[in-house]
Amino acid sequence: MNAQLEKKNALANAVGESRALLDIGLEDKRRYPREAFKRLFDSVVAYAEATANDELIYRNVVQSMNGLRAYLELERKRMPDNILYDADRLETILFAGYDPYFSGDETPDL
Image 1: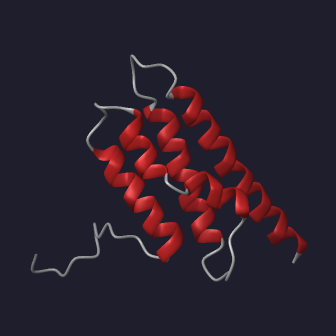
Image 2 (image 1 turned 90 degrees about the vertical axis):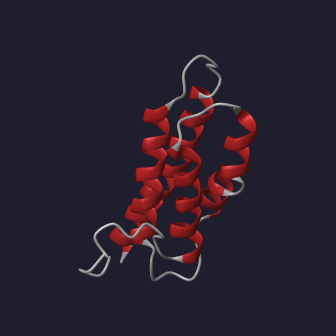
C-alpha cells in the first residue's frame, strides 16, 4: 500500500514540475515550448491513470491544471493548433475521468 502512495506522490510532483517548466518555457516569446507542454500532458495522463479509482486528487495537481486552457489562450495570440485542444482534453481526462479523443475506439464502419 505504501508503494502505491509513493508512486502517486511522485506522479503528482511530476505534474507540478512539468507545469513549472511550461511556465518557464512560455517566458520565451519567440518559440512555443512544445516539449514542455508534451511533458505536462504525459505527466497528467500518467497521474490520471494511476488515480482513476480515487475519489480525491492531489491539491498541487488541481492547482497545476486549474484554468490551464484559459491561461494558455490568454498567454499567446499565436500557438500550435493542437495545444488548446490538448489542454481541454487534459482537463476532461483528469476531472471527468475519460478521454474525449476516440482514435481507435470508433466502430468499424466509420
